[in-house]
Image 1 (spheres, rainbow, N blue to C red):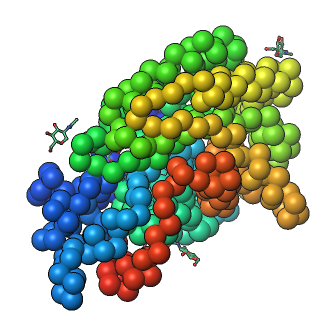
Image 2: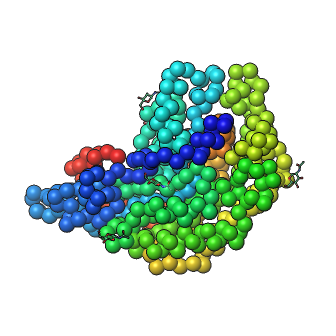
Length: 396
Ligand SMILES: *[C@@H]1O[C@H](CO)[C@@H](O)[C@H](O)[C@H]1NC(C)=O
Ligand SMILES: *[C@@H]1O[C@H](CO)[C@@H](O)[C@H](O)[C@H]1NC(C)=O
Ligand SMILES: *[C@@H]1O[C@H](CO)[C@@H](O)[C@H](O)[C@H]1NC(C)=O
Ligand SMILES: *[C@@H]1O[C@H](CO)[C@@H](O)[C@H](O)[C@H]1NC(C)=O
Ligand SMILES: CC(=O)N[C@H]1CO[C@H](CO)[C@@H](O)[C@@H]1O
């Protein structure tokens, strides 16, 4: 578990799991999300796999297939939930551990134990390590790509383990978008938990206040307003309510105790809180009063976000608010008669499991379609033709 908290602080280099690949590395003018350069007649400057000229009409393919349909990229600003944090159970559960499961640790560790390439925000591939992480991938990025294949590879995941609203500014500064050259974007701001969750035994004074959240979010929005291409959209997502975690998990056996059936989550939480090293002392706690205080704070902070979205206006983007998707995902799951613990990653018991990822993507997507579909850009009627002409568009 010490290993776990050490890993949460690692910050190594990040590659294409986090951000669409620059397809022509030697050329700084080529990157996902830019407007085509001279119709991308001679090369794929925007890396969406579509370039060249139709020999029949002599028109650039970008003009024929993409130009009339409003394209956009997706940028996700978030915490470990947006980054899809996952600690493989098969590394610590004595019943699952094997030479094979322990073998594949380099890549996950270099990625800070995040799996953004499989997550609900910017996931784009299925797992290649089924013993470490199980379940299929679907994401907002993949849905945006199926809606308009011209959006291929245009994603950035600016999420980091442990991030709260206080970190938003740092992340926005690493955002790559050029107002004059690039396409509009859909920015999702989803700091789900760390403004309420912390490791301290006196958790409440360490929670973010409403005034502080307001300031942190307005700072981010003003910065976005200065850099995003006009016609972009920004969505603020409400905080998650973690009250369900304790009643769902407390009596279950933790993976570390599977062999002798002797270690329950409640024991792990108590140990976490005593050492002040758990990810969320307020909700992972047998004290129901404290859990209710945390829930109230999360609700109040979500109201702050909702009010900002209702009142503020920006030149570069339209601003929207969405309720946190997790309650709807759980409700749907229960309707199907399935137990809620399956949606929670078993080692830390806080993060949504791989099984939950496509469901979170679906709820967010459906809520956007219902409330402000213009944020998603146009459906492209040429998608099949693009697939026929350009195949998998160079992959990811
Ligand atoms: C992942 O696998 C599922 C089931 O085989 C498939 O339907 C889906 O298209 C795959 N997703 C990706 C991103 O390859
Ligand atoms: C280890 O990773 C490689 C490459 O990603 C994959 O082919 C292999 O199946 C993985 N092994 C396990 C046990 O997941
Ligand atoms: C955007 O690109 C143009 C042309 O390449 C360049 O002159 C400008 O400095 C860039 N803007 C930013 C904010 O990077
Ligand atoms: C439970 O939490 C509340 C709120 O933080 C606190 O006032 C109370 O003393 C705690 N109870 C116990 C038994 O620790
Ligand atoms: C906030 C954050 O971690 N941003 C990173 C996203 O990924 C890119 C490249 O993959 C990094 O350069 C950023 O620092």
